[in-house]
Amino acid sequence: MKLTVHVTTCALLTAIVATSAIAQRQQKTSPPCIPGKYQLVESRGIVRVVVITPSCRNLEAMKTLGDKFRVDFAAERIIIVMVFDSQRAAGMYDRMLESSGSLGAAEDRFYDKHNVGNYSKNTNTSNHQYIITLQGADGPEVVLNY
Image (cartoon, rainbow, N blue to C red):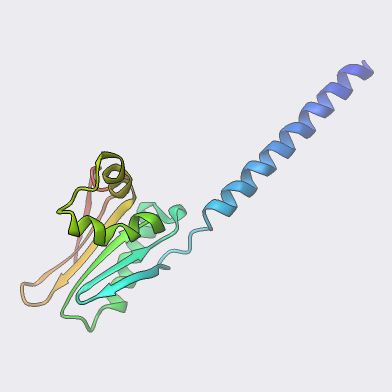
């Protein structure tokens, strides 16, 4: 009986330690989501490239982000905001443009996977929309028209 209790206790402690280690690793890799918060990576002309935390890759947080863009860029007549959930993918934006949209199969997949939104506004044409792609550029789209 004592042996069974000891083994069960050891197994339980091992599971707790393992769960704690996984939680700590996830916390280090992806900060908690603060809806509407983004990091500006690049600003050139009418284009902005921003990064959000991967934990904000959900519809509610992305809609809140769209509302934040509407406020932050209200004075802009023409604006395009590319949204990524990876700093590396955001950094690939210029290279992707310069290469006519192809960096090789593996890099293209990585870029597309982390391209999670595109906000655009053009007051000259009355176009004002936010396209959310939670599964990446090749996944289904949620289009919000403002």
